[in-house]
Structures are given as structure tokens and as C-alpha cells.
Length: 198
Image (tube, rainbow, N blue to C red; front, top):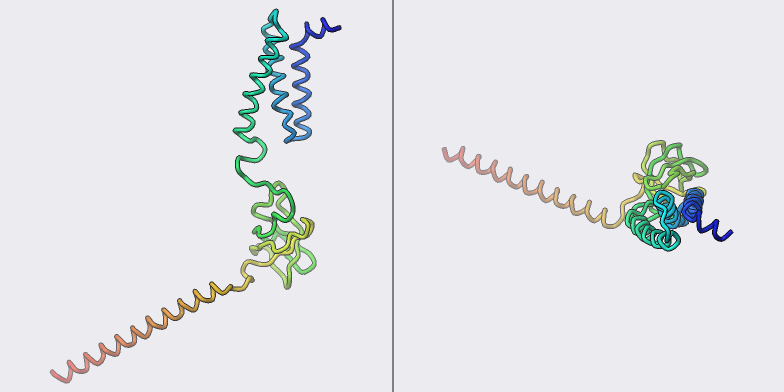
């Protein structure tokens, strides 16, 4: 039995690798793909190029291919893009923006979030009033991910900084108008004096 296993070791490695790769397809992110690729690679090489020192050569090949597969797997990060945050719980939805797909009331509605992941459509309700279809929204309360509490971006009031900036701009406009009116009255007086002297 043991001799049969050693004689067919490349085939056993190939089958075991394919099984692990299939399991990875069923449960992505389990990291079985690295071991599966290593076993399939060593098994294929063993089947195509039989060697008298097969178990030792296959072990070395499995290790070398496994290290290369692990490096590639970590370098390219096939399951989400390097450095990108993934939604792990509903609290990460707070502050997300999107738009209304079905009119949102205090009881029902639907929104699509800009960074909503695989299924960006969520049931939603407003804090007060109605938000019409197409309006941009922001998530105030993720509500456990079942029903989001949202508010229209246009309905969100100005904060102190916005009011101060608007007040400063109004004062600057008023000063500019005063300067213009003073300048125009000075010009009128100068023209009147010129007319009198001639």
C-alpha cells in the first residue's frame, strides 16, 4: 500500500491540490489556495517529469512553489485590493453618502450608497420629512445594517463655520459697495467742480 502511494505521489499531490483549490472556491479567504497551488504545481511537474528521488524532489518543489504562491497571493491581494478597508460591521456605514432610489419617509424607502460594497442598496428612513428620489443623502445611524437612518445633504443645516464664512463674505460685499458708492460720489463731485470752473 505504501509503495503504491509513493509510486503515485505526483498524482496524489495533484488531486489533493485540486481539492484544496475547490474548497477555497467554496470559502474564499480561507487561504487554502496557496497550499493548493503548491500541491498542484508539484504534482504536475512530478507527472510530467518522473524522477527516481520523487518524494524528496516533490517535497522541495512543493515548498518552492508554495513560497512563490504565498508571495504572489500577499503581493496582489486578490480578495479586496491592497490597503482598502472592507466593511466589517454596520457601524462603518455611518457617514457614508449615496442617493435615494425610492422616496424615503420616516417609515420606508431605499437608498444606494456610494461605497456600499457588493449590495449597495439599503432600506432607509428619514429623521423627519420626505427625501425625494435622486436626492443625495448621508447615513446618520446605520441601525445594525437593516434599516439606515438617513438625512438629505441639502437639508443639513449650516454649522458655525459656515455661518461665520457667510457673515464675513456679506461684510466684505457691504464694504465693497460702500467703497464703490463713495468713489462714485467723489467722481460726481469732481465732475461738478470741473463744470463750475469752466
